Image 1 (cartoon, one colour):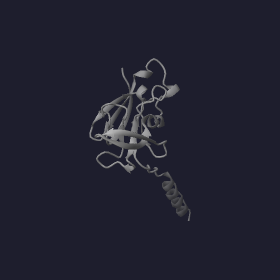
Image 2 (tube, rainbow, N blue to C red):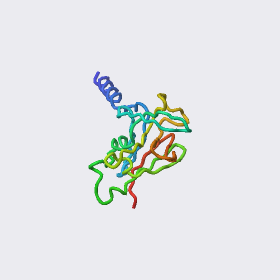
Image 3 (tube, helix red, strand yellow):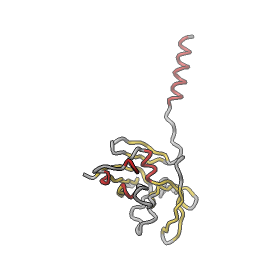
Image 4 (cartoon, one colour):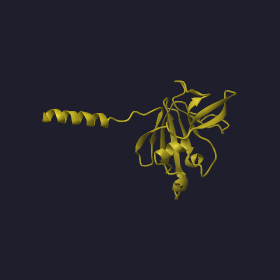
Length: 160
């Protein structure tokens, strides 16, 4: 009888120890310490922005990149200080290998009101497979060169 109880307890522990399944889209964030963490945008403060894409006005919904970075313990706001603080940048990488860089000051609300969004919806619908599940949108820029479809990873680095 004792063996059956042990098996039952082990089975219950294994069921409880299973990793949580991420709800919704995630992005891998690699912090300054080199530690990688998957960040889900579910449950984060959502924003709407209107932008021009292909000559048409479209509405994107998502989260601010700074909020995603904060979930990975990236120094922002009052924590962004020191002699090398403004040499920090974020390297964004898409599934197809496309990359773009953002200076940390471009993302920090204590430096700018500019918007760098990680969107998962366009005109009220989830992004399609070609674009999503996540897309970087920079609506205030004159060119869409840093708009990035199929965002996979954000790496926080410092210039040397």
